[in-house]
Length: 115
Length: 109
Image (cartoon, rainbow over all chains, first blue to last red; front, side, top):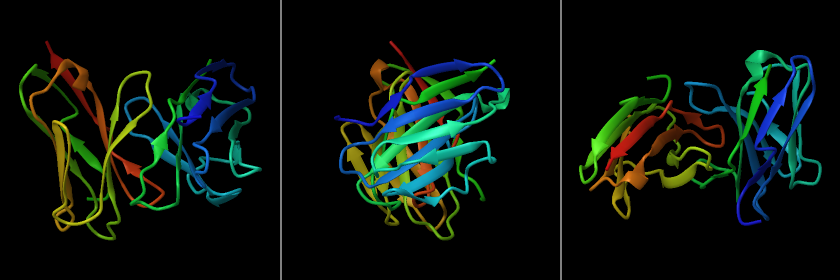
């Protein structure tokens, strides 16, 4: 596609349930990033993939969060036993190569609400 | 400064006015500074990537400057239009961007 695509755009789930958020990066982009924006905050780093491997997952808040990118393209962010504090906008971005001087393109985000 | 900070948090300007916002970031171990514009229900749109001290970049009516020694960047909008209404985010870092909380701009027609 022309841009980074995230699905679903909105997700409402009950506390304790499992959710998966999908990200389709721009074709050919090897670097993929997940960020989370909570109300009133700037986006916070969760995890960075270079190809298929998670090069840095230091931003994942706890072991309920996990992300995969099995074929080096689509990525899925998985959240187990969701809690109300997980409610946020989850943003995915991709870039051609890794690096702070490289432009990263963001998707529209998935707004997750845990009730 | 340990975090990325933006000011003001929000502002309203009249159509046609020029305005500017500030982004402050840690000056040590600087790598790059990014500006994004984020309209509601849309993707954050990259405006500028700046890496060199003294950099000045321009895109239409929007421009930005960078001072890496003192750790700040300014974003300027000349002749604001209602379509400029958005949240403007800056981020510093390598792949692990540290974002500010943004400046919410509302341009009144």
